[in-house]
Length: 318
Image (cartoon, rainbow, N blue to C red):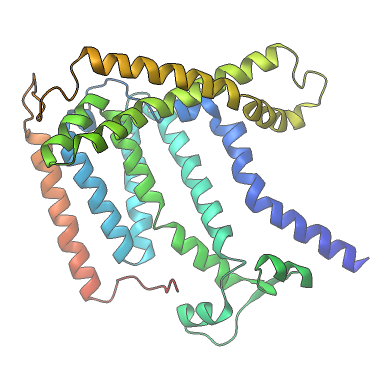
């Protein structure tokens, strides 16, 4: 009986790491939530008035700071950036969506490292010889790369690593939500990035929200036709996942049609007719941009001081 209980709980823990983030995506965030945080909506707060080049620099600064400093600095940046979501259009909804997206990142990253990290790495990271075991896995779990036991240090280690990604993902979404594709195209072109690369990025910015829109439409149509109508509500997320899988083919068809329209639109605007692009509106640096540059400079100085004081990357990755 004990053997059966251990196996059941172990498999429940295994599926928790994979299924719980998906459940949050389907039930809490939803496809409309992803549409909300992957498309531009006009508004008047400071993010919207900021030059896209400055926002790209801000993303690079956040990435550098999260990569070279101790984990709790990344956690502070995550909290600060998430709070700035309130300044976006429909800020409360986007804050909630960003919060759950951060939760998914933390759970997924923690569970991706906690069971797999070798004990020697954990002993080196936490300067201990004895680890605190929480759960002993069945012996055949080692085939999947699991360590014999799930340890408290392993969970903490995975959580600390997740702080490298949360702030970066949140600030990256800010660029998408507060800049039009044409603004990003002009900004990247001024930096000197080849036009073929910038055009690909802009097409991706326009395509990603359409993917979620097409999937959402397809899933709703399938539910209108009776998908999962006789099943209990507790199984609704699984039918949503099934509907999303069935939506792959129609979404591809819509995207191919959209690619044709994009090509026609680029041709009618004489895209690449000249070696350099011309701009109808000049790219200026305003007071908001200067303030952002001052904040970024201050953050980089604080980061340098923190690293000198020993608050650099304090956990090993090898």
